[in-house]
Image (cartoon, rainbow, N blue to C red; front, side, top):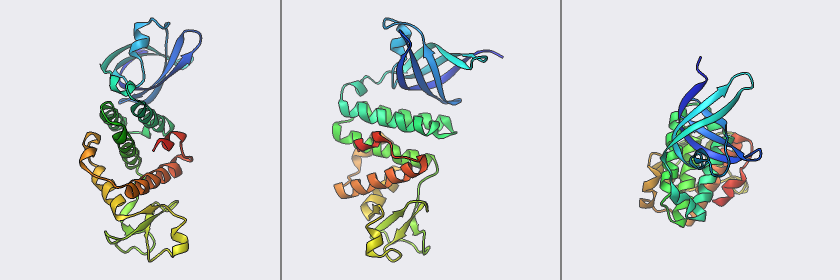
Length: 249
């Protein structure tokens, strides 16, 4: 069996490794998350190519005895220099990458995961500071749906009745669904994330939307805050913790 493999890849993270080398974490369409070593000092051409948020073809050598991998070459297809031109873009891109890494690349359907990540980064590369948060929120919500975590917005998980489109509802952590106002008294309502009509409508609308088109859909601050709290609660429960990078929202 050949020890050399070629992957369609996105570099999610880099860090120093030893005196002059670095480690990279790649999201690949073929096998999910891979970690590989890039050998060479600061003037290495490969080192400059293998930078965060670059997409392309990665040549990886696998040493089966030690189970280590070396990045032999990287043919960059997308550079996304815009991500380094604005603080908000870079932070949102980092938050998306950390979410992917913490959830192990989604655990399957890696090509879809790669498409979702690259579409988000492409949109962020030219976004203004306001849209960066919207794009990140859209990514986290799409990632939750990708992981199979999206709660049912149509029916109450307690009584089973349809939730009127103009009514408030509440996320019930641990139950994977929403509750209507009839099933929760005022005291209990204050303990759960709200999901009002504007929040639910926006989340349902943008789920199948390209992140580059988010500017076409308005979202008031109250609905944004509800959507943010709901998405963070859903992902945080599934992953076992709330990631610090989500505080950017």
